[in-house]
Image (cartoon, rainbow, N blue to C red; front, side, top):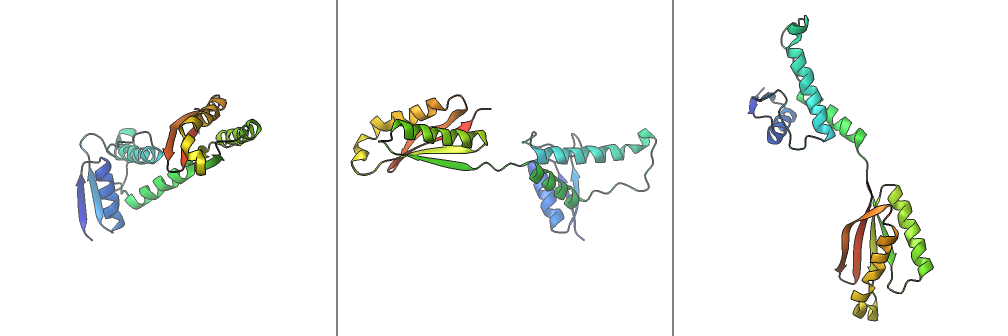
Length: 182
């Protein structure tokens, strides 16, 4: 069995250590500051899981201070730590879908209200909404004057959402993205 020592437990160190463990190597991770290293994304759930594993190992290494003895040295299975991290990440994740609302420049007030209500329903579920204003034929000549429709749409939903991406012209359509207020 090949052995590998990774010096530095930052994001690159963790990646190298786990890749080597998956390849069947015996890995030792050395970090000067504290056991378990550091991560740029310190608030993420997988990092918290890895940190908890490192803290548990650090406590296990100091069992004598608590009056507990352990035969031999504690062994860390990086594959098991990675599996626990991935399980926690899957448990905490939420899939955010993008729902699309299509409008035309000559939309009537009642039709616009119906679309606004549909968008409000999507936003309260936690989805992002892509509002598309489609132009056909001669409508292309009046793209700039139709921007007020998207502005009115966003204004009507201002109590439940914020504009993530302002209206932008892309080919034959103008799009804007809305997300729920936090």
